[in-house]
Amino acid sequence: MERFTWCAAVLAISLVPSVFTYAAGLNAGRFQGEVASNLITAAMKAGPSEAIAWGQLMQDNNGASAMAVCRKNLQQDASGRHYCMLPVWTDPISPAGPSALAQ
Image (cartoon, rainbow, N blue to C red; front, side, top):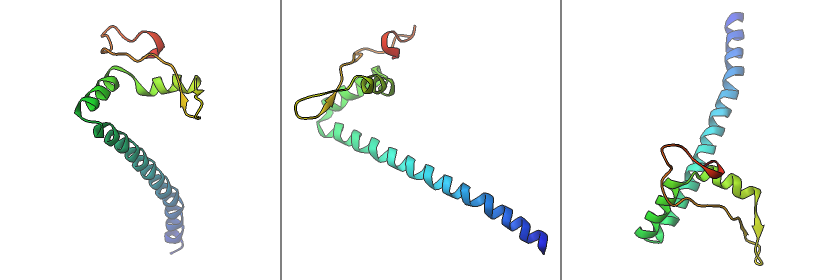
């Protein structure tokens, strides 16, 4: 019986952190999914042509690297909104590979 108690204790000690890690990952994924869903919904509300234009920009640009460059160069307008200047590619990435700004 003592061996059973020891095994149950080891199992419980290893299982509790796993459950918390799973729950944290699930919550983070759900949050990211909701953010993406809201952004896509906002783009679609502007109409089909606006959604197609945003889709083309997303296809031609790497959003994560663009935002990383943008966050390093933030500026603020008179009303307090933040903005940045960065190139936005308007054609597909060349098969030879990206050029300026680590597309």
